[in-house]
Image 1 (cartoon, rainbow, N blue to C red):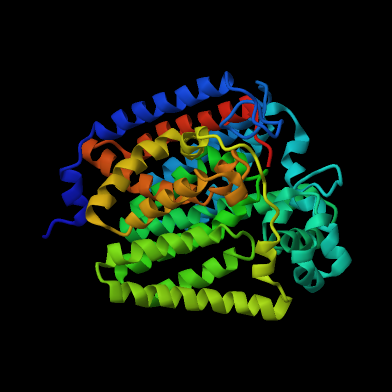
Image 2 (image 1 turned 180 degrees about the horizontal axis):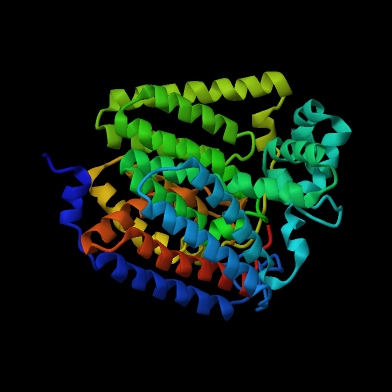
Length: 460
């Protein structure tokens, strides 16, 4: 029988590389942690210990909730890996327990309102939900039409820098659940964690079933997923952006323009929520000729994706009257002194929130994809585009320096996919049960999430 691609690459894979890489990355992240503790406060005042975007102050409470939910998540995950077959009932169970684990990590500082402040409609609040009264005032269509002209009325800077889809979604959730913010935030947490399905799909298409299950589990225990499930809308955005990127990787690896068209349509939906969807499109345009090794075929893929994406945006324009260009142009500049520190701190904080296990198993796979120009090479390009963008002055990017761990949350499921492939390869070479490796990795990753939240109050 012919040797499979995975077996061939596993036979030549060094077993010590992930461990050595993990040690190096851990040392670098620790250096950023120590430096952040002694650095001057960030200019806009609240976040004094970069690169993590949150109020500093160590507080530990509700450890029992975290331990209980972590045991459930790791236990079901180990069973999911060990049983040898896929089950959607287990996937749903994992997502539900992931929501519980996210709630536990969010509550580690002992504040019950932390579960709902991300959807608070209080005028004292400054996140998307503080502005959804404008949707009620104008109506859904009226709000979408007026969005570009409402900049001065928005309380939240996030409202000023994003399309109206988020406000409309929050408005509809409150219409569905009534004045029950916990139900709203739990719905969003469950929706956000479903971004793990993009990790599953990517690893399945580039590896196999075991890699897919491992990737899903690794995503559910990343600090980014656990910390932002109840606090940041960016994890919900990640569902669409990561799905689009995953489909792009599949389409390029299989040379399927129809799948590229689907990826473009999903990216069009993502653009209803965030303008950051453009970066997936840019990465696809750069990666296509490299992966396909044929500029004409690449042009077909790019045209298919662009066409379907524009159809989605045109449909939204017709139905809602939303002016995408006008809304983007109306974004006010966020001016802060340029600091080269963020050239290095932005990638560092993303690695922190991806979690050390994901980083140590994903990076070797990304290096391998660079050499072989495999479908995963798309992620290498996407990471490069994001790092380059985050290195620019904030008056150009409209980024508040220090919050890229949120705005780049769509990278976590993609990195988890690469890590799932790498972890299976590594455990196979060592002849170690995959479920045992996952449990150790999960403990390390959940522990990171607890330490981050206990030391920084990671606000929205």
